[in-house]
Image 1 (cartoon, rainbow, N blue to C red):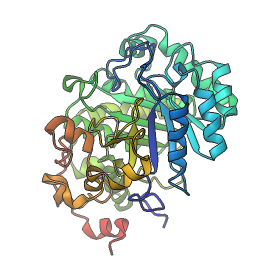
Image 2: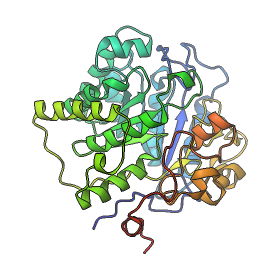
Image 3: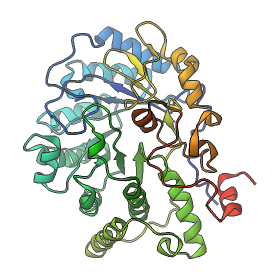
Image 4: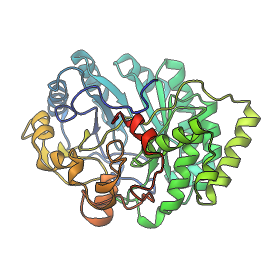
Amino acid sequence: MRNLIRQPAYNVNERPFMIIWETTNACDLACRHCRAQAIPEQDPLGLNTAEAKQLLEQVDDFGMPRPILIFTGGDPFKREDLFDLLNYGNELGLMMAVSPSGTPLLNAENLQKVKDCGAKAISLSIDGSTPERHDDFRRVPGSFALTTRGWQLARQVGLKLQVNTTVTRYNLHDLPELFRLVADYKAMTWSLFFLVPTGRGKEEDEITPAEYEAVMHFLYDCSKYISAKTTEGHHYKRVVLQRTILDEKGINIKDYTELHPVYDELRAGLLRVVEEKGLEPKEVIRRTPMHINAGNGFVFISRRGDVYPSGFMPIKVGNVREKSLVDIYREAPLFNDLRNPDKYEGRCGLCEFVGVCGGSRSRAYAMTGDPLAEEPFCTYQPGSWPYKEELAEKLGTV
């Protein structure tokens, strides 16, 4: 049987699977949840072109297989040297993707240049299924139209597309209609971001832990039709394992446990869309998202070269102007602690799913001040899963 657990095929103590570089904090949007608290102007203290090329060389220094490098922001298109940097990264043989914003810069010319410069994919964010809902979230009229047009243009030029949606109280009930859009535009992956209260994101914007659990089960249902994953919702990997075992036993999730009533609402909306569009479930097995976490197969570099475990965990461990990213990633004490689940506290430290989950280290830090604390928004009680032999088989521990 194909392995359900997606793990990097190398030692993440030596190299990350994914590197996020905040190329700039300049952006023409003013999103409610913005981690970067973006503004229209460039940061004069950001990495210049020569320093940025040195960063790309440091990424290359990790060796083979190379990490995936995501150019994010702000809006990467606000950097005048973006295409020069993409070209240089392509010459080095880096695997690159770009995460632009839904502004007039998201046009056919720029997307074609991204492709021509060697990037393989882009990710775009959509947080409401209608212009009114999305534009209210992004705080700029017209962003919905520009983003959805960008989706179409990206496909036309041959770029792979990931669609990102940040789940908040503003769009919780809109998720089935967002699924409809993702299916319509045939995105490579739908990634649901589970809000971490940092930057402009506030605790009052979040839904409850029980609602998050319901959303993860809804996303599992969606994964029968599209590729789906979460960001800062690491316990979704637990849900995938649990639901797979229940499916194999012919047990309906509603017969196993009680979920928040919003699950019934979201599932009904999903089934309505599936019926209307005549969607058929995929035959391939659904697998957990890649098991990476803050500082554990994942690293974030700010526009000024500061290195963090994640863009949602603002604990600086070094700067690429002063020390190689390779050495920072391998040697930073915090990173080594984050890669050691024996250091996790509370329920996470006791949980049988810790090897594939670990909880959001970023949310733990944001809400408790301790990056090793238990995941505050997970509802699972360690040891309560009854099908222990089946789980051990999936985890490869028998």
